[in-house]
Image (cartoon, rainbow, N blue to C red; front, side, top):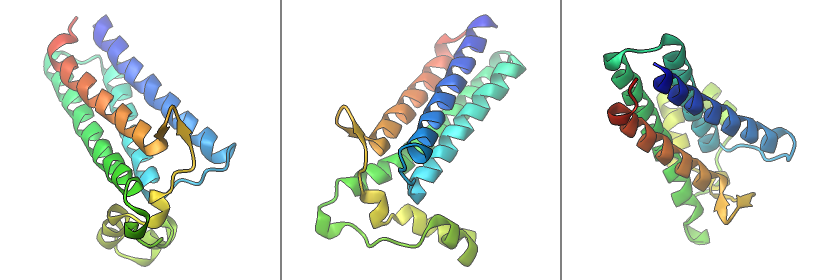
Length: 162
């Protein structure tokens, strides 16, 4: 039980730190998140909540596999969103889509399915890179973390046992 507790708490704390840093960049450094960034945050929140619930639940082996699979699915969804943004960021300037309306407007003015379709098709603001660390943009760092969470979740099914 101790190893699974440490695993899930570790995942939760990493998500909390990543979300905290995102909020720091937004509110202290003034970087406004694009629609794809917002959905990546939602994926980190999902991963963190699954891990926190699993830590409190103290799952047996069957539930541990279920929680790890849920973590893997949330990480894959996040990686897909981050991957889309990374792809947009690496498009040649003449192929970057036009900037679209803000996420709030899209969710208010359009049906949810249409708004989601517009978000995932991307816009020019999602292709802009305003911050880098060790040569990687925020979307690229998010992709790295989603891949690491996916790998950890898959490995946890096999190796994290009490």
